[in-house]
Length: 281
Image (cartoon, rainbow, N blue to C red; front, side):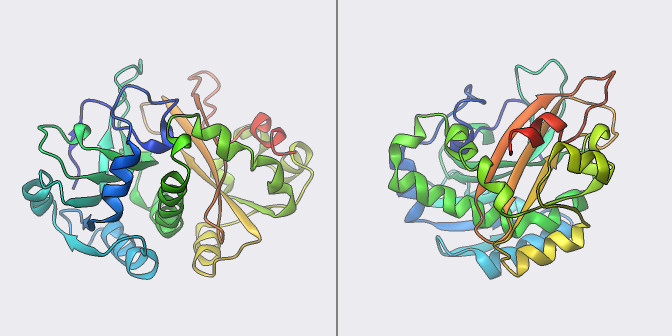
C-alpha cells in the first residue's frame, strides 16, 4: 500500500527529532504486545517488498502473532483497537522546506481516527525516499524488523526511555563499532570517503566496501561481527532533503548510530560523511 500522507508519521524511536506527532505511551506498547499484528502487503503482488517482507516476517517476527493482509483490508481494519499493523507508509514532514516523501516501515495500533498519521505509532524506521527503487532497502528488511522488535521490548522494560532522547541511548553504542567489522556500500558513502584510501584514513579500523548481497547474507546468518550502514537518501533523484544515517548490527539487531543531515544542493552530500566516521573512533 502506498498512500501519500501529507502530515508527518512519527515513532517512539524518534521522540526527540520528530516531535510533532503522537508519541506512544507505555500503555500503548503493552496493548501492542497483546495484539495480533497484521502485515500489510502492497497492491502489486509481485513487488519485491511483498516477497522480502513476507520472508522476513515468517523467519523473524516473534513478538506477536501475525497474519498477512492486503492494503484494502488494512483500510477496513485499521479502526479496530484490538489489532496492530506492520505497514509501509509514505511520509512527509510538515516542517521541511522541501516536500520530499519518504517510505517508513511502521508498527502502529488500530484506532478510530480519520488519518493514518493519527494511529498510535509504536515504532517507525525510515527506509527510503519514495522515488528510489525498492531494492535500495528490501535486502535489509529482516534486520529492520528484528531491530523493531528489540526496540519495542526495550521500551516496554524501560518506559522512562519513551520520554527521553532515544538517539542518545543508541548512540552510546557508536564507540563499540570499531570492535566489529563495518560494512558499507560504496554508493552510500559521501564522495569524500568513497575511495578505500580516504575511507580508511577517516576510519582506521576494520571497514569493508561490500555489496547488498553481502549484507543480506550477513543478516540471514546473524553475523554478530558485522555492523552495516543503512543510509536513506535521494540517490540522485530530484528532491534532496534529509539524509538519514543508521548503523545496525547484522546479528545482534542493535542500532549503533543514528543521525541525519539536510543535504546541501551544492555539495550533493548524500552519504555517510567523514565526520560520521570520526564519531565512531
